Each structure stands twice: as structure tokens, then as C-alpha cells.
Image (cartoon, rainbow, N blue to C red; front, side, top):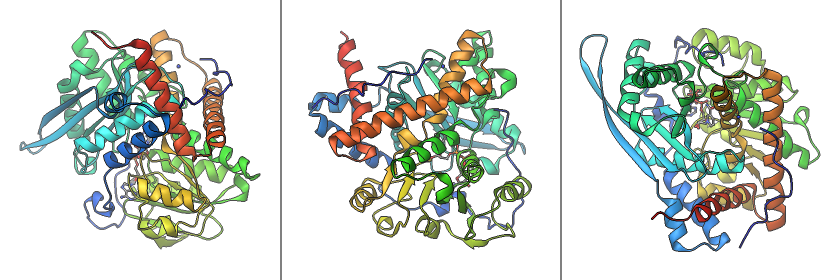
Length: 451
Ligand code: NAD
């Protein structure tokens, strides 16, 4: 089967440092990971999604094997000299899933549960995401198994510089470009860029995106993922004749993606009734005062303990009676165990891979509209692309230009995916995968095999 490319034209066109708040909230001293649900694993979900698209497209085993297998992977040991003089050792990874459409592109994650399979899944999703929004990139991802909240800034800087130097041969503005993800931020990107540049002998801002404005970052990057999540929510609601002021929203995860998204939803008139982070959540019927929640998080480092709302745990938040559920934390939170209880009519995936394959089937069966991660959270990589283009040209765009181009890209991609979904009578996720897997396969076929 060939999915006809939607007959719309491609739109023309490529943060300030976020400082990590110190955690002072009265939260239990748990490994931040302990709230993480057990699930099939993100790689199983990613492979099952790919297998479904391959089946529908009628591709052969050879193409399936090529698209299921990362092109390159590196696994590094990262010794750290701690501030107290002792030594600790961490494991780090960089995976380039596919580079047929351009250099690898993907975030760098610092989280205690990072392993190579998680990084492989995230790299594969980056390949599809870049193809859905028609960026000239392949997909890549990196990760270090570390809990950044337990290390000083100086220690994190040393870990980042050592990791960068270990993976140096694989990265570069024409090879593989990093960006922030869970547990990393604009400052982390500045350290990567500096380490890479010093080793190459000159300043190379294009090796990372999501870097601080002062060293070549782009206006609008810090909020781009969330802005894209809100654009795609609005597009999905419009299909049902609704808009943001008509809906109640719950957002899981209050980091770079979730906190800005919650703020933007509230700003646009939606009632944000629940938010959470890894330590717990808040619920208030009628809507939370987002400015006050943001102030509380700036002061304490967590949403926990906010006085104007009831506590809610991360499990209950997912099944809360709201219209729009936005998982914006970690993978695998919507599973076969809770998908039947999801009350929302729309699930907009701010996180990568929050829904397992089984949960996806249950939600589709129940008529819940899932705006898939590779579309919903693509705003971040779109503005990363804008940042990379600006760095390559050494010419900077205004915030208004960036926001307008981001909106065009997101709405264009949403319309293309929705058109395929209608035409093929499939879910938005299946449509996004059909389009993106086909685009990557076409690039493979067009380039041919060497030798
Ligand atoms: P972040 O580190 O800034 O924030 C993560 C948030 O999730 C924090 O509030 C943390 O407390 C919370 N969290 C962690 N574990 C949790 C758990 N088990 N239950 C509930 N909450 C938990 O990370 P981020 O950049 O906001 O990324 C969030 C998700 O969005 C990830 O899946 C990431 O891959 C995806 N994403 C991020 C970007 C980006 O530009 N940052 C772009 C696309 C996709």
C-alpha cells in the first residue's frame, strides 16, 4: 500500500537558560523513579507500532529489519570525580536510529532508569517525529543513567563533559544534534556545545539545540514543545467543534513540557484541574490558579504542598473526569490496566511513549482520540530545527517569526495526519506512523543501498 502524500504545500523554511529549582518541598526522599509504573517497555511499544505500519504498507522483511534496527549505537562508561573526592561511575548511551533523511536529531536524558532499550525506542520515535513534521533529520537519542537531583551543578557539568567527549566521534551539526530531554536543560546543552567546540578548535553552536540564548539559542525554543502540544490539542478539539475554553484538562508531569503546557492551556481559557510531578499531584474542580502553582514550584521545586488544592496521586490523575488528558512525564503510564478507566475524550501525548500498544488499542476501541507523541510533542524539534538553521546561517529570527512558523508546521502536520486517518479509517497514531514510516522508506529506496 502507498499512502498518497497529502496535497498541501510544505510551509516555507530552520530559551533562556532554565535554572533547576532546588527541591525544598516536603516530599518523601524516594528515588524519583519509584512512581514509575511497570510496563512492557518502550522498545516493545515502538517495535509493535513499527510492525503495524509495515504490515499496512505491505513492506517486506528486509525493509522492516532495516527500519527496526538502529544504524549506530555507542555505550560509554562515565567516571565522575565527586565533590567529596570519591569516584562514581555511570553508564551512558547514544543511539542513531536512522539517518537516511539527514543528521540524527534527538534529546539527551538524565534519569536513573535510562537503559539502552529505552534510548533505542526514543531514537526510533525521533525518526518518525522528524518525518511527520518534514524536517531534514533522522532520529537519535542519548541518555545517562543518573538522577540529576542528587548531584551538584559542578558534578553534572563534569558528567556532561565526559559523556560528550566519549561520544564525540558520533556527534556534530551535520551528524547528530542533541537537545534537552528529561533531567537536562539549556545549561546542559551549553556544556555539550563548549566541550565539542573546544575539542574541534572553534565555536560550533549547531551541535546542540535548546541552548541558552546567550550562546546561540533560539527565541521560543524553551516553550516550543508545549506550544506545539497546545496547537495540536486545539486542532483535535476543532474537529469536534470545540475550543480550549470548553474543556477541563489534567497534565501529568510538571517539567519543561508539562508546566508550560498547563500555563498555556490556562491562558487560553481551559480549566486545568490537575497537575502532577514525580512526587505527587494537585486537583481542584473548576481549575487551578496556574500562576500561583508556578510560583509555588519556583519556590519549592515541586507542586506538592500547594495550598489551594487537594492532593491527588499520579495514578488517579490519569483516570480523572476531565476532557483532555496530557501525559507529559515518562513512558508507559497508560497501560492495559488503566486504559479502560481513562475518562478523558482526548489524550494528547506531551511525553514520548506514554501509551503502551495494548492501552492504545483499548483507547481506540473506546473512541478516545489520542494525538500521538510523534505529532503532539513535535513542536520542540521543529523549533530545534529553526535554531539549527539560524546557527548555520548566523542570522536570528524574531520570536513572532518563530511562533508563526511553528504554528504553520504543527497545523500543517496535524492536517496531513488527520487526512490520512480519515482516508484510511485509522487512528491518528496509525496515520502518523504510516506517513512517517513511508517517508523514511522512500528515502531509503531513493538513496539505494551502498555498495
Ligand atoms: P523534565 O525533566 O523537564 O520534566 C519531567 C517531569 O515529569 C517532572 O515534573 C518530573 O517530576 C515528572 N515525572 C518524572 N517521573 C514521573 C512519574 N513517574 N510520574 C509523574 N511525573 C513524573 O522533562 P521534559 O523535558 O518536560 O520531558 C517530559 C516528557 O516530554 C518526556 O517524555 C520527554 O521525552 C518528552 N519530550 C520533551 C521535549 C522537550 O523539548 N523537553 C520534547 C518532546 C518530548
